[in-house]
Image 1 (cartoon, rainbow, N blue to C red):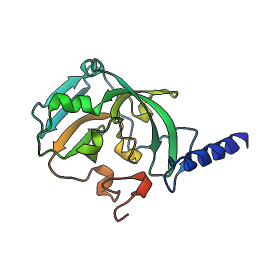
Image 2: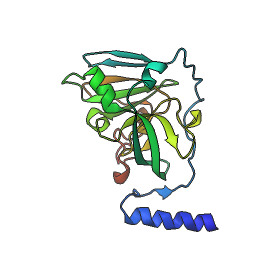
Image 3: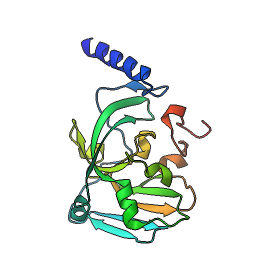
Image 4: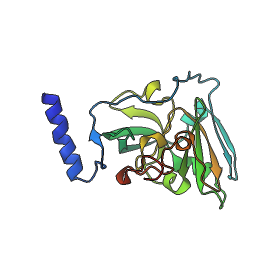
Length: 202
């Protein structure tokens, strides 16, 4: 009862501050949701690749990726299944750092995110270029474990969490929007939690 009252009090505070999207409720835990099995991570064979409409296609090993400049953000996280987790601390590599390395061509406007095991999701390039979008290699205060996307998870805080793909392996820069895995089965192409863009037609 004490923890439920604490949760409800915090939920009211976040709602009053305009941080709780409509239809969402606060969680003090970190639920685990994903499609398929958790992929096995082998640092000796893992790589990160960028292709498509870029000047400099890229391939990085895990050790090379870890040598990139690290950033830290604190951001809220909203799942399409109606829970929100607030003030997550993420560490990792900013999307902008990757974009600066590959130099997107002028016609590149969208990005298809590729992740294990065969998962994809689409995000406009302008959204990924925001200051608080990163490829996370760590999370606090909870451990960053494989079930939450380790070793590498994209974090796009202002969109529903299915856009923050787990187990990311690469990017493809595109000139037009294309549906990813969940988008092909009915999820919204953009996914703004404050507009409740959960499914097509919303």
